[in-house]
Image: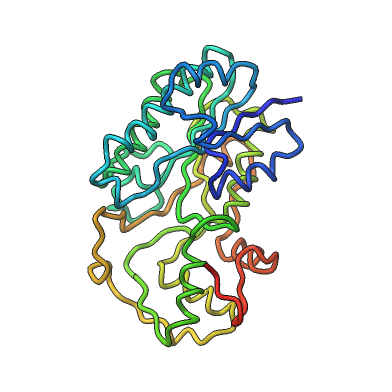
Length: 290
């Protein structure tokens, strides 16, 4: 039986990974159970595992602007520790990364080999994590980049927008940032396919296909809820100033899936509809999401 270690097991994606990988022997450890910044603990913990999936991360994008040292320790040095330990014990490492490693200046999907150029502290620390992993263990590490995640656990755009819509007649939603809404269940399935295929290394973009804006995302959610999308008002990013810059274009390409003879990701609308039907992204007027 394949032994899998999942770090950051308390997070939204990790929760779906635990379910999706249940046919394997998976040990999920939260930050409290394993601090990936501790080199000795990481080295000892990884022993005996065949695969390590690192879902542990500092993800407070705006706070990272003033806490970059802490974010770097978790997002860069932590993955380095895991890469060293995985190499030492002969395990494969799957490092979860992000679209924030790109600057958003593109006009067509970023392919897996595109040059990175982060524009925020969070993006810099995640890029540093990718580099650390590939420096230490290129032959046994997979970088999995994802973006615009939503799922049953934790906070997400669908939960926030649907909850806000129950208390407001109109909602202002950003319409000049373009990306790929991605269901965490689909990401977990993509990661499972990499494991089942025996992929040892490389970079893969685990996002749903297609593209939209936050306004388009909200419009689709309103349609699923049976609400009038005219209640949504498109606005520019300048109307919502944030401490950290966001990539204006976060569309990722999926060439390496087909190159590896793996199924390419499905369209984001199909995934969102399935998430809605399954009850993982839903609401009732009497029960606001929190």
